[in-house]
Image 1 (cartoon, rainbow, N blue to C red):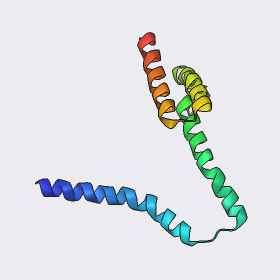
Image 2 (image 1 turned 60 degrees about the vertical axis):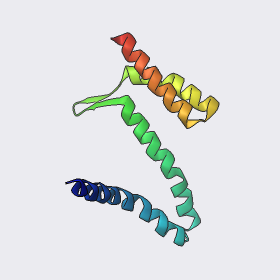
Image 3 (image 1 turned 45 degrees about the vertical axis):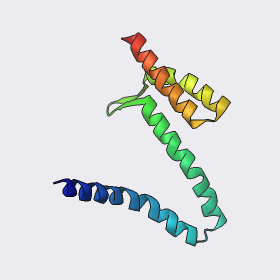
Length: 107
């Protein structure tokens, strides 16, 4: 029974790991043109911005997107800490603590 769980865990790990690592392995061996390199440099920023704005907006099929007020308020001190410290751990802790305080106060 335990070996089945271990096999399942290893299999899930491989299925998760392989698509995330293989592109980096292949990309190291390829030489990209400068325009492609420039495009790829902006890709992480675009993905993070999309995830950031997705977490701040409520979308409905029939309405314009609306802001999630609690999340927007929590972003203010989090962004300030990020700009000032550029330390990922402090940014995450600030965001989690701020969101917890907002939810505690809002009831």
